[in-house]
Structures are given as structure tokens and as C-alpha cells.
Length: 521
Length: 110
Image (cartoon, rainbow over all chains, first blue to last red; front, top):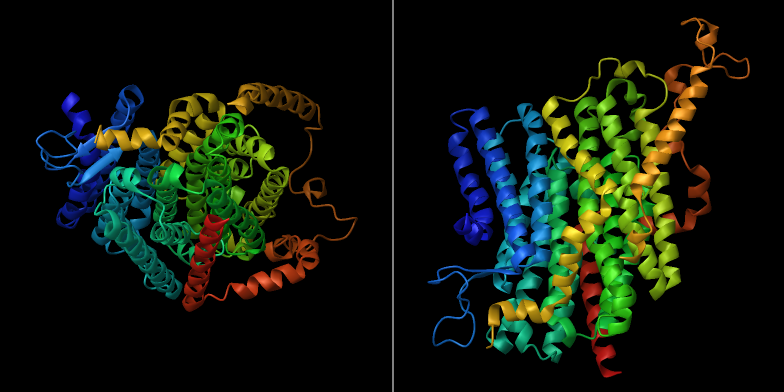
């Protein structure tokens, strides 16, 4: 068991990667065998992430050096700096790992029924697994170059998945837009990494964090990294690709592509807190993040209310919800250099933002799946053509209600808990920001009331007489997320104490992140 | 966490269940002897004949009309910014990089 824990971080990446390449071969045997391999690989990855998480919560940060005599030998003999590929997994990374594997597993199960109606299952599942690999690698890596590599993996696989249904013109367009903005974003990240490497001859995040001087070039690299990652996470005004992409991605993969954006959000936090950390002008950069957050919240939700395409509506809400996370983390960052404010409300703001990441991944994932279930059953995403679906699709309707109440921050759902943490802490920093956040929540509820009324209530429409509930695997995929939402709603303190607070502490603890790799160097 | 120490979802769930039980009690006191398919179960629209289901259902584009009218200028501006043209996305990106870089440099000089 100890050996499994030691190698769990690399195995969680390697197993889905291996499965991705095996899938086309296994597909020749049959769909059932292929599905078993895909689900098995993702379930195993989830298991490995969970045992890794347990180890991290008990023993602290996990470091894994590839190719070294011992996995924790980060700096080779006669060297002053790390040169090998290092995975550095702290409570924040493993928190994202849990989200990634859970959503990937739910998405893969949900996709089983959907893929029965489609051709190219071998390619679909290969891409789905590669997307999971890209996300896990991105959140586990401890060096900037591999950060770029995994960013590319998730971008390419995400774009190919978005464009998977090539028979729809908008799918090709959505995939094309995603790959263009991803390529631009990734190249800008690579350019920033090059700037840092040219000055310090280092790629390890920990080694760079120790050496960084916050020179003029470092500031340019910072601006490039912040904005490139903000574009990948679809922050306003860099969000316009997101509705085009999220709305066309096939069933099960939309939540994954969305979580890929959340992985980029993690990347942004890692850059700000662990790479630059206290050397940063935290107040200024904190406000930059806050402004991006407020814009995302407000523009996202107002655009969402206006939509009649259910998946575009969901996509704009995804943008809006990312704003809450940016707001919480931005406030925490703005007061990072002020120990009193940090202890008084900054830590809670960061915790609220982090808690909102997992809550949002769950209910946004569920809502994307319910939207796709409606499309699967009705063949349209247009809310104007829907109505009375509660009669035909009871389970989907119930899942939709759970997701909608959670995202709108209605008590006692989990969205309320993380928003409450954000409201209270942000109020201490700036009451106006807290009021805007609450207003956005009200508009979110209004928007989902519209979606629910249009799709599920009203008289039974004759053209939908033959519509039936979606197949069981799709219900199971939604059910996994719905159960998780209910659990998170009923036991928020347990969740916060177990996974959110350690993630917050890990994010703030730059010295611990550096020390785990650099030791006394 | 300060906010979580005062928040108990279980209490709210229990309160909801009690209220649901009270509501169910009152509902069960209602008239059970109605006849399906008669005027008793038809839509009542001030005595007028109810339109067909297709005409009766309020569609998504009809909702919040007043809200959108009140914010017409905001929506016109915002919609115009969403051109759907990828070149514009990259222009936005370049502009935000430039603005952020200027902010970071100016803040460093102050």
C-alpha cells in the first residue's frame, strides 16, 4: 500500500494516458470492453487521487521526482537546483485532482448512452481520457514547462471533443475557436516561461519562486501568464469563446471542458500564490483579479438571462460563477501582505473561492448534463421549443432543480454555503463588491427560473408526446453529481474542514511549497 | 470559518420537512371527489375558452421583457461586443494584456 501511495501521483496520470492509447485497440473487441476500460481507468485514477489526498492530509505535501533514485530526491547530487520532471502535489493540487477525476468519471458514464447513437467511439474516449490526463497533469506538475505541455494536451483534446459532432456546423466552429484561443493562450504561457527561464535558468516552480526578483521582465511574464490563463478560464472580457464551445461539446464532455477551465483557474492561483507569492505587489494584482471577477459575474449572468439556447445559457452561467471564485481569491490576494486582514477575512475569502470551485464543478457539471439530456430527448437546445417536460422526464427535472437551486445559492444547497463565505469576507473588504455578488445571485435564480419554466413546466405539448426519459447510464452520471451536491449541502463544515481549509493553507504557504522541493538549498 | 459556525443546513432541512408536513395536511383536507376530464379539471381563464397548449405556454423569449427593455442600452452595447469573430477575441486579449502590463508597471513605480 505504501508503494501505491508513493507512486499514486504519477499513476493517476499514467493510467488514463495508457488507457487512452489502448482504447482504439480494445474498441475492436467491442463497445462493452471499451467502456469497461474507460470507466475502469477513470475509477482507478479517482481511487489513486483519493489515497493520495488521504496521505497529503495526514503527512503533508507529496513530491515525486521522475527518474530519480528516490522519488523524493528532487535535487540530484552535485546539483544546486532541480533538473528532473517533478510532480508537486499539495492539498490544493489534490483538491483539484478530486474534482477532475470525479467529473471525468461522471462524464464518461453519462457518455455511454450518448455514444450508442454516434460513430467514432474509439476516438471519442481516447480524447476524453487525454482531456482527463491534461487536467490531472496540469494540477499535479511542479514545473512550468510541463504546465505548458499539459495545458496543450487538455486544449487539443478539448477542442477535438468540442468539434466531435462535425455534422453540426456550429460544433466545428466551437472547436475551431477553442483551439485558436487555446493555442494563443498556451503560446503566451510558453513565452512567459521562456522569459523566466532566460533570467533564472530554472523551470521548477519552487526553484523559480525562491529565485524570483520581480524584475521588469518578471512583471511582463506575470501580465502574460495572468491574462493567458484568464482567457483559458473564460473570464470577462476574454470569455467570448466559451458559449460557442460549451454549447456544442457532446454529452458528458461539456462538464469536463468546463473543469479544464477550472484547472486553468488553479494554474492562475498557482502562479500568483506559489510562483510570485509575497514578491508580488499583491494589492494591485489582487484588484486586477477582483475586477476580472466582478466583470465575469455581472456580464456572465446578464448575458445568461437573455439566452434562449439552454446550453449557451449554462455557458454564460459558467462564466458568471468563475467570477465568484476570482472575487474570493482576489480579495485574499489583495490582503495577503496584511497579516491582520488575512486572518480576519482574507483566509475565509480564499476558502470561499476554493469551496466554490468544487461546488460549482458539481452543480454546473450536473446542469450541463441535464441540458444535454434535454437535447438528447428533444433534439433541440432552443428553450422556445420546449415545455411540459416534467411529465416526460421526471428524473432529469429533479436533477435540474437540484442543480438550479444550488447554483442560485438557495439555502441549504452547497452553492449557498460557499457564496455565504464569499459575501461575508468580501463585505469586510468592500461592501459594494458583496452587494454586486448578491445581486448576481438573484439574477442567477431569475435565469434558472426562466429555463425551468420554459423547459419543464406548462401544458403537455403535443409535439413532445413521444419524448421519454433519457437512458439509465445518463441518469447515473447525473445522479452521481446530484448525490455529491446533496452531501456537500448537508455537511458543509465537514467538507470545508477536510478538503477546503487544507487547500487554502497550502495555497497561502509559499515557503512550504518551495521547501518541499528545494529543502535547505 | 466564521460564517459556517452560524450556519446549519440540517436545521433548515428539518424546518422544511415540518412545513411540508403541514402543507400536506392542509392539502389532504381538500375536496377529493373531483371528476377527471370535466370542467372541474380544465384550465379556468376568467370564463374564456383556454387556448391550445402550444399557445398557452409562455416561451423563453417572452420572459422578463420589462427587464430587457429597462436595460436596452446595456444589452445593445454588450451584444455588439459579442461579435462571434475570433479576430475580435484576440484583439480583446491583446488589449487586456497591454492594460494589465501597464497597471503592473505603474503600480510598481508608485
